[in-house]
Image (cartoon, rainbow, N blue to C red):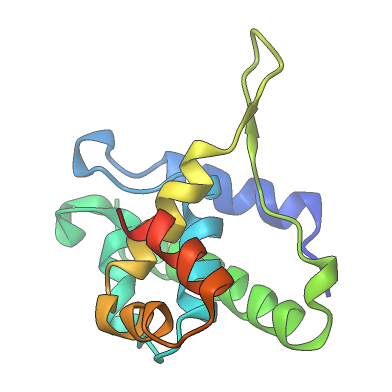
Length: 146
């Protein structure tokens, strides 16, 4: 089941509300990050990856407990929706790329950055693909791990 525009805007707004100095993620980065987590050859538990979403200082990231729970639920809902989509109809997955409001250019770099950050959580798992003998897969992984 794809996200509604309202769900995506809610998640984007919650992420924008986080303190900029914490170096949290944008919605495009979160989408790439979640995709990377889900296709990783090794399971990565939420307790290991969630802190990367909101940045350096979890305590200071949220206005109050309601803001924390709302943001956590929105991120986990996004994760679960993408997990179901990739498991049931992966061809229907569409990356959330931003668009430059001035040039109308597609901004794909934040999505790639998020995906790469997910890869760096379990580099040995991805290295196994490089050493698997599948030249095409190895080439793709090597480009992202550089």
